[in-house]
Amino acid sequence: MSDEVDVPEDHPRYQSLLTRHRIEAGVEKGITSKQGLIAEGRGEAFDYLLGEETIPSADAAERVAAAYFLLAEHPVVSVNGNVAALVPEEVVELADVTGADVEVNLFGRTEERMQAIAEHLREHGAEEVKGLTADARIPGLSHERAKVDRDGIYDADVVLVPLEDGDRAEALGEMGKTEIVVDLNPLSRSAQVAAVPIIDNIMRAIPNVTAHARDLQDASREELEAIVEAFDREEALAAAERRLREGAREDAQDAK
Ligand code: PTJ
Image (cartoon, rainbow, N blue to C red; front, side):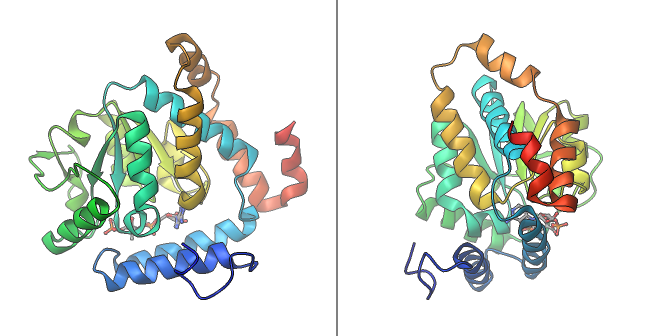
């Protein structure tokens, strides 16, 4: 990875520069939309305020997400243009460890972008990429994000929806699915409606969910259910908002 950007890994802005570089490369490769650049800028501002680290409440939510994935009958990771550019290998690894499907689902859906993203994911180790068939619809959504695979998101019981724009998250919830949202903004509509809001950068969140899934691989159903039941989504959102508004000092309470 170190040859991706022209700065040493110990540069204080390394992660942020790497992220920008990947998004830029994603746009050049026809994977990421131009709107994705704007979304990235917005995300960066929140990440800066969070201290560019996984806060304790996000780590806890990532463990809960792993438990949900391991309990699920049919978990699916939904991938858009930003996610594909930023964490292709990490998404494939999470799917491998948890037995999840990977499905491309785009707001700015075009056949070219769908193909480019599927190809990019295959280059990073994906064996099967869903989303191209689009033989089902999420009820109540008028835009392109409604198009899903019948044996993918439509059939899923648990869906990870990173960097959403809100209304699909709500519609999936209405279909009775458990939604796990990764979004740096705790006030975004998708984070607000998620069963598990993960307020963290996707670059840190996905590998950490995978690490927790590995850790929990041998846990019993009862142990996994206990992790899920103990989770307080309102508190997770409140802890992130506190960190954003008040900085690391107040949030230190959460680590105790
Ligand atoms: O690839 P497409 O066509 O499906 O389009 C995808 C985008 C991201 C353009 C679309 O979903 C969009 O416009 O999203 P929004 O409404 O800008 O929301 C993106 C959210 O993701 C914002 O709340 C950002 O704070 C957040 N975000 C941005 N970068 C990251 C992030 N959250 C986690 N990690 C990031 N790296």
